[in-house]
Length: 169
Image (cartoon, rainbow, N blue to C red; front, side, top):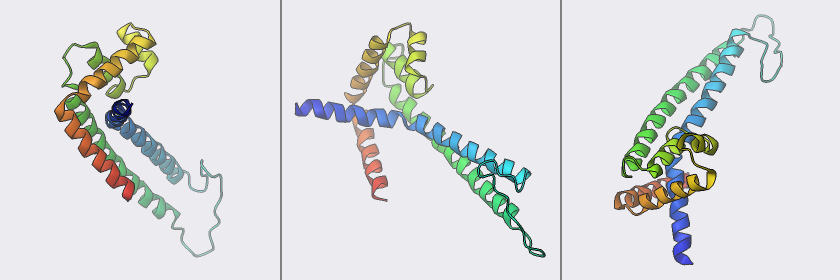
């Protein structure tokens, strides 16, 4: 039973590692939506799409709303650039790991569709012409093949340490 728990833990860690790109693209989407909201607010001051509040200015006192918005926009644009780098780096890391699988294997195809193309299980089923159960079997078989490779084990140890460090912050 202990071995089964270890295999499950290693699979979870590998899935989390392989999901880095998906999480990075989701975060990128969130930042872009936030940027679009702020840009819309800057174009239409006083009409905030998110809060619908109108701010009153005191006579003779300039509003710093536009300057604050411009600063927020600049900060989000910087985060978007950083996030883009994270996306590029994570997709490269994932491709390096998946390239360790046999080139034309169904396992590799399913894992690539899931973790690089970010396809849903329904989409994957249509693409590989399999039902849900065989898709999961190929997916899990691919994970097990990867977990048997020393380079993947080493990569996961580094990733685990990185996650542990992030949780401490």
